[in-house]
Image (tube, rainbow, N blue to C red; front, side, top):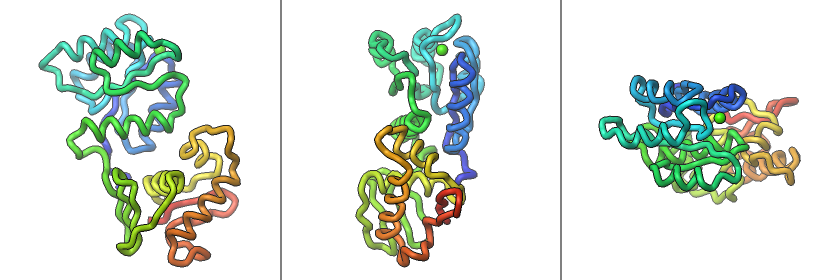
Length: 233
Ligand code: CA
């Protein structure tokens, strides 16, 4: 499931550290990813590669992000690529102008990479033809209805809290991959300062109690001693 590309994303950002982090998260989430550093290169890349979505920073050297958008949206011959804008905090003008020009969504800097990926997923789910984003994850005996936020085990519904669902979904989207409690906090709790890693432990325990046939000998939610947790597909 993870070997199949979930779509292609062009990252247009002139700050290398931000571009690198975003590209890394996108690839980890299963997106084919290309990075360019200015507006002219962005226009060329859209023409040549036809990405499904562009993450477009507004503040770029030369042709800025809003001008890139204007040109893309005016050119009727260009396929209508989804656009997610990156704007500076407090820059209401850019946000309004961006949405008016046809941005699908925006994210304000500084942002958490996990949140950005969630927005990318959501935009592609809304705008895509359905081939890119998954609607359901299915494993032996376990089904996760992503859009409907429902989980069934052996055909019976398992009622989860929002956070339990997000934790399960995150792990199940990365089957076989081990995550530390810190990584899960970052990806699922998204940098909330009011949680600590004990929260992760508690949620995993609750999730097992609801999900597993034998919570003490988990089939799906494995503990990897000294490291963290892994979803066993
Ligand atoms: Ca920039």
